[in-house]
Image (cartoon, one colour):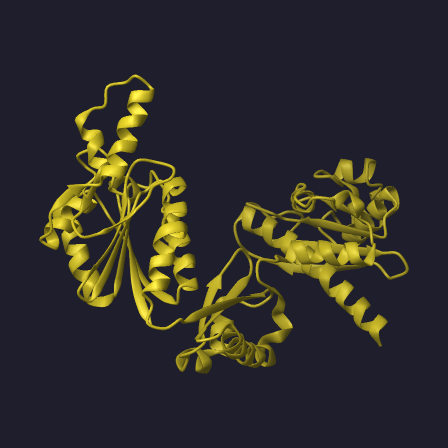
Length: 420
């Protein structure tokens, strides 16, 4: 199995002025070529530091892929430094030089001498055409290493890599290695707890590999298997996934790119159930999540944001008695909010959110106290208490996520009963 290191060149990356999106793109493409990426490196426009990066990368990687530093200015140093490191000369690629000259001639502009730098290539390299810019890319094999030089702008780099560099990598592969990955999504369990439950599997992992990631109020596991066929790689993933399900399947809500919100909306649409929402501390965040889906009007009929006690009473018809005796942060208030929004919007389901986002306590309830009510036609209305104890915006986002999880649990139970 070959390994690669992606080296992004540019001081602007270190300063945070540009996000290094190229590394993510190249890593994904390399996986399809059967190449493991073990290191991402970012280095500024400094010849000595770039040379040191190359020396280190050669010791741990077979393929070195550079992005950036191929432009016309003096701080574009990638090919000059690599050429010097490999003791190779730099020559012009006539095709790229002609392309640049024709561009300036067509605009009746004088071409400055430094523009020719973009047509320079390292002697002995295979030229990678730039269909959307001027800087020539390079593919160079020297002894035990492969060097690929790509321009920095993603609009130039991505088509150059997929159209020209990737086929060369596949052609030069000793044997085809297929990498397959699967994302498993968890909710209701922390990353540390999940890692602890799987610690023996993680400690002895070889193929597939198991990687855990903490997402926004959820945890993700990525399983990656390598094999000579896609079928074999998928079989290895399925075996490992089966063991994970045995241990923590209760917290799995989906896989791949499908989020909890996507899944719940899909379930509601399949069940042909309409929904409405009454929000206090979340201030419309739940409804905003729904609104991000095309065609949501099929199931989402509307809702209210009732932040104050007055609007809860005047618009949502929460009784004064409930507000005065139980408070707005209470089970009774959450139940009335969910019931009343369902009836007002004439939907099958109503969900409510009320609580203390922060930074101060309310009605004697600590920050992070949240009540979520769920009202469904033909079912008793229930409200559930949560305590998050984090900052204001985390508490709001977590409440929304718990709301979707609550709906999913109800729909799953309904589906199970139907099947039985």
